[in-house]
Image (cartoon, rainbow over all chains, first blue to last red):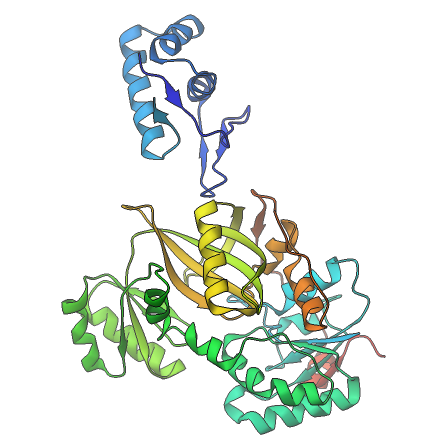
Amino acid sequence: MTAFAVPSNLAVSENGFLFVPTSGETFTLNKLGISIFKLMQKGADTEEIIDALLEEYDIDKTTLEKDFTDFVNQLKHHNLIEEK
Amino acid sequence: MKVAVTGLNNIDSPGPGVPVIRGLKDSGKFDGTIIGLVYDSLEPGMYMDNVSDRNYLIPYPSSGLEELYSRIEYVNEKEGIDVLIPTLDSELYSFTKLAPRLAEIGIKTFLPTTENLNMRAKDKLFDFCQAHDIKAPKNILASSVQDLYKISSEFNYPVAVKGIFYDAYICNNFDEAKTAFHKISHKWGLPIIIQEFIKGEEYNICALGDGTGETIGAVAMKKLYITDNGKGWAGISLKDDPLMKLSDKIISALKWKSGTELEFVKEKSSNQYYLLEINPRFPAWVYLSVAAGQNLPYALLELAQGKKVEKFENYEVGKIFIRYSWDLITDVSKFEEIAVKGELVNKPE
C-alpha cells in the first residue's frame, strides 16, 4: 500500500491552515483534509488512512476512496506530498 | 548623527524612504536626526508623524548634477549631513557620480559604482546573467516601433514591455505592445525592454551587499496581493535555499555595494528560478526585512560609517506586510513652507 512523504517543514494548524515556508503559498484544508494530512505526517499508508477515516466518519468506503484519491492528487499537484 | 534620506513619496507606488527611516528608528540604536530630501511638495513622508525631522526640496535628476550638488551642499551647510541614503532608481546615477564630491564635504554614502549600476541595468541584465550562468528571460531592446516586429520571431506572446527605470506592462499581441511602447517611452524615454514572459510565481529578495561580494543579509518575499498597476500591496516572508543561494551568487558576481531588490520568477514547468530584475536600491517593502529579523537599513547605515557589520544568518518566515492608505490631514501652512521656501521643519534643531 502507498505511503506518503510530507516535507518536514510543513505543518497544518488546528484550523486547517497550511503554510509552505519555501514558497509562501497558503492552503486551507477542511476537517477531512486535516485528518488525512495528519495521518500522512504520521507515516500511515493508504489502507491505514482509509480504515481510520471509516471509523471516524459516517461515510461509505467507495465515496471515501474517491474523495481520498482526489485529495491526494491535489496535494501532489501542489508539491505538498510525494508518494513513497 | 544626521541622516538624509530620499524617496518619501509614500504614494500608490511607494518610494522606500519611509520604510528605510522606520528601520533606522526601530533599531533602538539610532538617536539622530532624519533629513528628508524630497522632489515634490506633496511627498507624504514629510507630513507623517515621527518620520523626518526637517525636509528640503531637491531638484529632479534631469536638472543636472551641478544643480543637485549645489542644493545638497546648501542643505549640508545648514544641517551637517553625516550619511546620505538615496533610495530611488532614477537618482542613483547622479548620486553615484557625486559620491566622491559628497565625501569631500563630509557626507558618507554606501553606493554601487557606476559600472555596477550599468552591469545590472535592464538593458544589460541578460548579458550579465549569461556571463554568470544565471537563468534570465530573453529580451529585445526597442528604440523604435519597428523593433517590435522582432518580437514574433524571437519569442511568443505574451511579453513584458518595460521602461529603462520604471513601468512594465504584460502585452498579449503586437497592438498592446505598441501601446505600451508609446506609453512608457513618452514617460521614461528609450530604450524599451521587451522581455520574454516566463509563466510562474514571482519571488523577490531584499538584500544588502557589502561591496566585496558578501551578502550581509537577504530576505525573500512573495507578493500576496498585487494592485492593478502591479505593485505588491501585501507579501509574506519565505525561505527557499536554492533561491537564497542564487541571491548570494548574484551579489557576489556584482560585488554589490548597497541595498538591492532581486526579482525572480519560478518557472512553473521546470521549477527553475529566472532573474527578472536587479533593482539598485532597497524595495518599498524593506521594512518586512526588519520585521523578519534583519534590519538591513540600519546595517547599511553602519556600513556607510565604515563600521564592521556582522552577517545576518537567519530570519523569520511567515511574516506578512499589508499596506494601507490613510488620509493624513495637515494644514496649508506646512504645504506653504515646503512649496514657497523649499524647506519644512517638523522638529527644530
